[in-house]
Image (cartoon, rainbow, N blue to C red; front, side):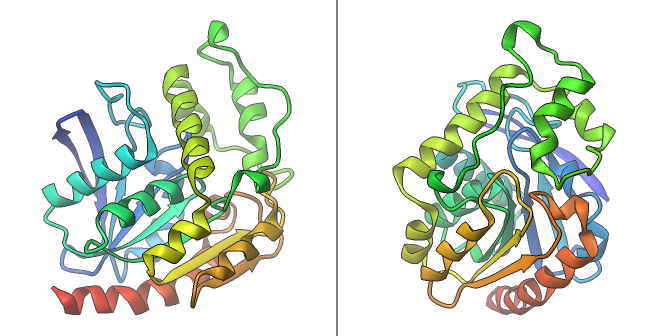
Length: 271
C-alpha cells in the first residue's frame, strides 16, 4: 500500500493505493462517519487484479475538513474528480458503500467520461426506504463521545450482534461533530432532490447493487427500486447487514469481482 495527501483547493485529501499500478482502476468510496479503513478487509481480495484507490472524504479519516465548510454531495463528487485528475486517472469503476454511493453517483453525473461503471453496496435509493434510528447516541455538547456512545450510534450499521471494530470507533471519535452531521445532512438533501434510481437511469452507466438482507439502516426490499435502471444487476447477501464489506468480505468480493472485472477491462482498453 502507498498513501499520500493531495493538496486540493478546498483542503487536503488523503488517498491510499493498493495493487498493480498499471492495473485497471477501482475507486472505493466510504460512507458517512467512516473512512477508507472501512474497506481494509475487502481490499486484499480486489487488489490482485485491480489498482485499488481509496480516499477519505473531506472531514473524514485523515482528510481535512473543507475550508469552505461545503459538504454537499455534488461538491464531494467534484473533489473526488479533482483527486483522480491529480493522479492522472482517466477511467475507473467506482464502488460506493452506503452514502459513498451518492458521492459516486455525483462523480458520474459530473464526469461521465471518467466513470466506466458503478457498484453500490447498501446504498439507500430514497429517503422512504430509510429505517429511522433510535435516540441519538451523542450530542454536540458531549463531543467527543465515549466508545459506548459510538457503538450505540454505529450498531445499526451492522448485522445484529456484530462487534463494531475498535479502529472505526477511534476514527469516528477523531472526527468533528460538525463533519459527521453535515455529511449526513448532505446525503439526505441529495436524495430529497432526486431519488437515486432516477439519477442512474439518466446516466446510463452499467450498475451493480449489493444489499444485505438484514440491513438495519435501509429497508432491504428497497434494493428492488434500482431495477428501473436498464441492465442493473441487483443482488442480495443472505445474513448480511448494512456493512458486508466488513461483515463478510469474501462473499462481497465474490459478487463484486465479476462485475468490476468486466467493466475495468473496457476502461483499460479505452485508454
